Length: 212
Image (cartoon, rainbow, N blue to C red; front, side, top):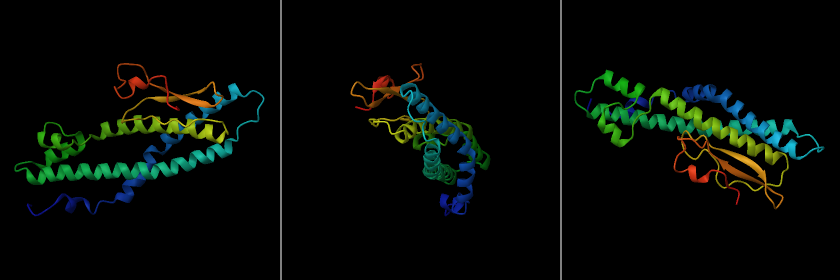
């Protein structure tokens, strides 16, 4: 057992199958979120462009689909890299800890680091439920904000791109709010939820123009 390494256990893992499973699990939510962001942009545009030509929805939908496909690849790749690192940490701990049982290893992988202090120091393993919740909160928010920006670009609006875009961190719930600047171009405010869960990183940005 002492000669084994964590890689001996995970090299044969079917990572391509895992990627496809993750894509399928998040696809519908990402598409729904980016569509809501698009609709928010169109409502804003229609309210301020009475009588103008209707937005080219097929072009916007195509751009959204392209973003989803590109982002799927990056997101799933990053998630699998994180999973691989967590497996390596947990297995390394198991291999170098005399008396650690397979039941303890299973609990470590399925439920999180728990009371095992060594892995807590090196970076704990997220439980499945916690990982899913973090992904849903963060990535759905990212898709919404990307949909808003994507639609504004396709609508041909004169706009200043935001230099700071949420989410800024895992579980970030902040968003962008478009407004017409006095120079006639579209700018974006950074909007937080303004509750007790807003972090120190996002709090000071509330209602700040992040396009300047």
